[in-house]
Amino acid sequence: MADFQKQTVQWFPGHMAKTRRLIKESLKLVDGVVEIVDARIPYSSSNPELNDIIKGKPRIVLLNKCDVADSNATNMWVSYYKSKNMFALPVDCRTGKGLNKFIPTVQKALAEVIEKNEQKGMRGKSLRLMVVGIPNTGKSSFINRMAGNSKAKVADKAGVTRQQQWFVVGNGIELLDTPGVLWPKFDDSQVGDKLAFTGAVKDEVTDIETLSCRLLETLSKTRPQAILDRYKLDSIDGLQGWEILELIGKKRGFLIKGGEIDYERAAVMICDEFRGGKLGKISLELP
Image 1 (cartoon, rainbow, N blue to C red):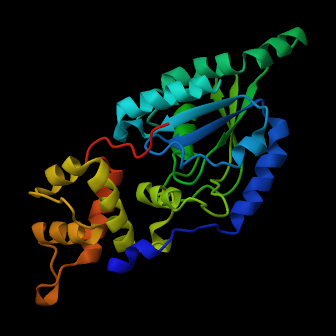
Image 2 (image 1 turned 135 degrees about the vertical axis):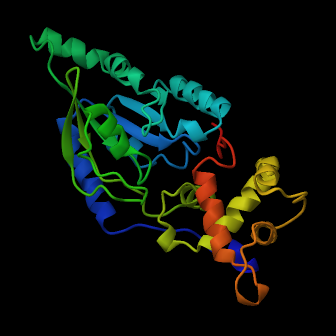
């Protein structure tokens, strides 16, 4: 159990390289790009290759899952993107929260495109936007909400969308869905950890006990009270991640034959509860 610090999270399925090519080829078909990131980890959930791939196209960032992120941190990220001349909206794509501002934001972000269309006598020409994001950030939920149907596949598992599809969402806007893209390697091991914490990297390719230990160690430094309150613990001062996992397993009565703690069951619960917001509204990154 103590070896968990030596492991690193890596994931780059073969279809991802094909997806990057598809995005590059499809850019000429669109007027702008909508990037969906996880509001809890906007830096780690933004693909650094996108800057080079999309170049000068207008870009709107949707800070999804804002309902489980710290609202003060999210506001800081909105200000940060604004300082970079980018548009950002806190949203929750599953419930639709914040999405009423999407179309007005598109019209602001693509004002130059709209003006050029009008000058060419093409007033009312559809605005086409490519929707991009790493796996499991909520692209399908966003498109389904905007299109008013459920044609885009939705799942809690990373990497469900596989092929490109167009969706008409009204108000003269069309969305191009793309498969989720992770980059070939995570130069910063903390980025890999955060992606795994939030479920962007499949649990099947990580060690869930290792992952929960790292998550607990991260939260013990930044939000210890969240752990104490949720799991009714007295203190976690100076404890390593696996020791906190052990305490929680005991507290919840997760025992197997011979009175041993069922570490895997405790680990799965902790990751699920963090992702579901049961430990509170927690952001892991600030701009």
